[in-house]
Length: 362
Image 1 (tube, helix red, strand yellow):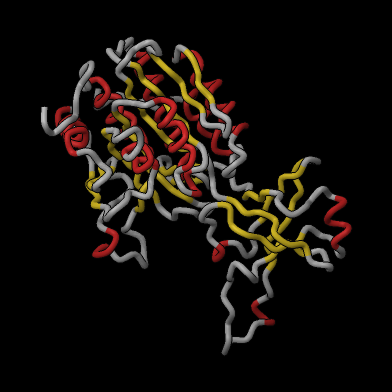
Image 2 (image 1 turned 135 degrees about the vertical axis):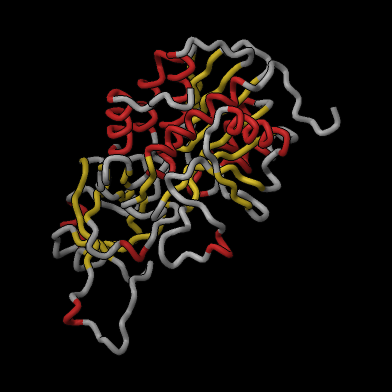
């Protein structure tokens, strides 16, 4: 099993299409439709909710329920103000990085379709070397080629329009996947591949499996909060991304040591239930799946927290994909890590027994 190559041409074609589609927080539905279409042959039914979370279900009549989860949204901007001379000022939708904005091309989503724009910035020749002003949320702006506010509005742009970057998927040096929104569209992709693998290997689970692609994680774990209450699972394995801390300007003494290409990262945190985590680490060792560890103070900052503290407490664990340059348009992960996250979730599911209690007192 450990030597089996998981990602093939079909899965990579889906990954590229899924990543290139824009799915900003609050506007995830087109991406969810792509995800559900890919998952359809491998699940018994789907659940969707009012805000767009999508769930593929295997064995829906089973009383014991296990969730595997990723989140579907990506960071973006909102149009916040249009000046009289036709420039657009923005506010964040999620944790968008203002420092990378200058000189980026953007897509403004309107009812009339996509309006192209650019984050402008004063030329280096015109800036004061003595008092260099950095990009800040209140001084970055978008130029759509209009000279007046009225021209901008005729394009269909108004306050509240969501703005995304168009940067698309590519591969560096054969095995490094690069794109915006790997955080955490990769999670949705990996849990879909787990289900694909179960189907391919004709594995029958003794419990109900709920494959959750949640919305609105980037603004406070909101989609996971809603769907956790609806499903009421017995256990949840969440996958998200975490920082590769080997790149410049990151303090390992504060952030810990994680590196792309070295395997999935298993979290240690109060929200992570120890017996479920031990099942996962034992599974990794059993199947010789490389893994790393990461200690997280207080909360994990992921949908793990939403599941763990729902429904009077749900045994939850976090398996993260190491990633470079989070919340930029060049987020980078390694193919081997992607495959090993898929393997680890797959094998962990096969090690969960029907009706298993993760209580410390049993």
